[in-house]
Structures are given as structure tokens and as C-alpha cells.
Image (cartoon, rainbow, N blue to C red; front, top):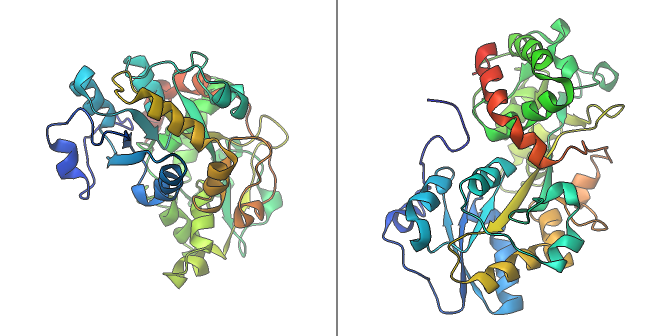
Length: 345
């Protein structure tokens, strides 16, 4: 089976029963019904604010994977009005299967830069997710680092941690490198990078950060909001303790810039509560919601002029890769093939 972000249909325990039950046409008379790959604990502050602002109830079904297949199988009978995802690849898949409908909204167009929304207005970025290099403060000097491409240098042999190549975060990064450097160059890079791994990929981005802190490796690639979340974790002091041993390096700053993906959304083709669905997307790019993305979710606001949260701001400013997400999506399948061939598990 090919490794893609939607290869398996794995539902969270909390919502499995709701997700597998026959779907009603709507959960409530004045409601918006959301299918999302984002954990509800992350987006609930945003949805609570939306409900308070509009009086529209936000119903959520969460599934880590398999939502595209679910929408496709439900077809016109799907109760879902909105698809919210943690990566652009899911939105591109949904668009390609005709599962999203175009939305012409002056609010969305004004708030979201063109590179972060679909040219045909079927999906929209709602927040930005940077994927920099993270390094051990006591073992790596920032001047030793430069680009993603340089991580294939043999000097990093046995010193890198990263999560599985099956995860869409890494597929998006490698796809962006293909767009910049070409497939042949990235094939060679992937071989060198895989040879430099300190251990077989395991766990999520937090696990890579903790591995750096514990000395299992010296550098990792991870999304910046994971480090911010660890630094702010008051329930588990060990998370903050590990995070304080790690610093962020922004790669490719003399070239194309650091890789950025998105949290985003779109209105489903089957939406029965279309007006409320559009209302939700427009709310999520409001100043209030963008500040919640910054302060509660630790992502970068997509709307220009809204500052990142305090902890995220401490990571410094960076130059982002201006490549359109649509262009990244074109290279995603090739990225999977290249990582497989390189032995990046």
C-alpha cells in the first residue's frame, strides 16, 4: 500500500461511534457540521468563540485519517458542511475528488494571501505551520546549520531525528524541495538524509524534540507549534524542561525560505448549511479567531497584521518559502516515491 496521509481509516475513540453511525442530514436546525482531522481540543476554543458570536452550533466529527474516503462514500448524503484539516494535502485530495465547492467571499479573499488559498476558491488557509530545524543548544552551534538540503551532509550521520515519511508533514516538505531542486537532486538528498538518521522514525514531532533533549540525536525537523506547546505545558513539567534544551533554526533563509504548510478548510459539495459553513470560514479569519490561532493553538496567523503568540514570537522572524501550496501538491506523490526508495521509513 502506498504511504499517504489518508491510507487508513482510523477514527478517534471519542468520535468513532458518531462517525460510523448513519449520518443525519443535519445535527441541529441552526448548525454547521464539521468533519476535521484536527483534534477538537485544539479547535474548540475557536468554535466556542464562533458559537458565541453567531449563535450557530458547531458540531464536530474528528478522524485522524479517512475523512476523504468517508466524504466520498457518503456523497450527496453527507451531513458535513465544512472540512477542516491540519495539512493542505487533505484539501487538495478533497478538491480533486469534487468533494468541495467554490466559495466567493470578499472576506476570505481580503484576509488570506493568494498563495494560501485555492485559485478556484475551494479551500482556504486559516493558519500557517512552519517546519524548521530544531537543534540541541549544548551540542550544536547555529552556524553549523544552513538549509534542509545540507542535512544530507555526512557530518550529521547518526545525529538526526524525524517522524515517519508516511506523515503528510514530511511529504509536504519533500514536495517543496522537489519543486525547488528537481526530482533527481532530491532523490540523492533523500538517500543522504536517511543515512544520517539516528534511529528509525518513530512517534510524532514532540517525540523528535524530546529525543534531541535526551541526547538521542542532535537535530530534528518539527513544526514550530509543537515546541511552543511544550514550553507552555503546565500539566507536565518534563515537556517544558525538554523544550528548553532545544532551539529553532530557520533554514534556507538566504534562498527560498523555510517550508510552510497550513491548517485550512473548505465548504463541502454536499453542504446543507452552506451559509453557516461560509460564516464559519469567515469567522476563522477574523482578528479574534486569528489571535486565538496564535495564542491558543500556537500557529502563525494567516491574516497579515496579526502578531504570533508570545512564545512563538520568541522564535524570531523568518523568511517563508513563497511557493504556492497548489504547486507543492503537484509533487506530493513523487515525494512519497522518493522517500520510499531512499529507505526513509
